[in-house]
Length: 132
Image 1 (spheres, helix red, strand yellow):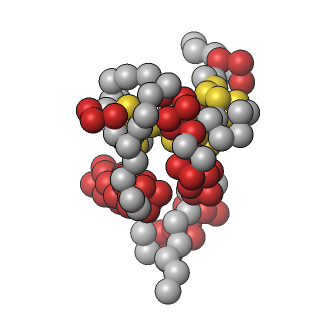
Image 2 (cartoon, one colour; image 1 turned 45 degrees about the vertical axis):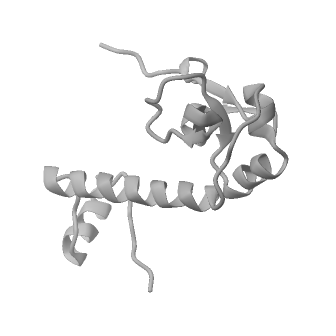
């Protein structure tokens, strides 16, 4: 039987903005790509050394403003305009894809009564609620 992962076993990465270490799941990974461009790597699968920023829009904007990607990469980097908005768009797309996969696999519950029963039974891992 496998043992639950302890906090020590959970990978941490250092944020280039704050200098603090955070759990990998709380961070955004970026990589240096062709043309010295910085690319967001939300899936964590692009080749290259990761440059990590805590997953907060203000910290990403601060990293761009203070040229921290250039400092971390140790080479002049290129960042497109609207970089933080691009990351937000990618994150929304990834979330919608995940919701679609959960729906197709039957793991997503919808409808007032079904959701209510699932919540009351303590079987829900997450609740997504629409807002107008």
